[in-house]
Length: 212
Image: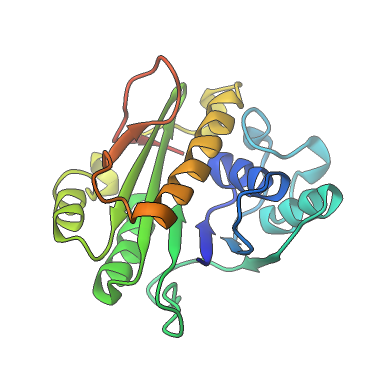
């Protein structure tokens, strides 16, 4: 199943490195991001000082090339907005991981996926030492309805936790490993009978409104 990760920040960067280093079975992976690396990203993202001022997508590709990749990895320098077609009409199933830093982008992607009823969304929420994964099978109405009602609110309602507020990258690393397992779970049972909201980090509470 093709896997698309939107966002190369704390979660997205850690996730792509996890996928490149482990035998996950995913061989068609796309990472999308348009942002630059800033000094505030140093504390809990995969970037070093030498990456400051450069495109995140190029830096992540550089890191994964050093590790060595197996499979078809694509690195796309683009902003996902209303004009970006996140849904591939030529495939029957796909997984899209939302590792973005705003609710508007989440809504744009979710709306397109819900209309197409093509595959699954895994929405990641991080804030300091909190990490949550929300799984949505776009073909299951109760998944879609619950996500819209409880988790797809406006940016003004969110509690924004910026990357500079935490110096511990461990939260993102924990979350990325759990998200890999969530992707595998979808391939096995399409999230049927699974908890829709899960805690990605041991001994912390589930968060819905804090995010990176």
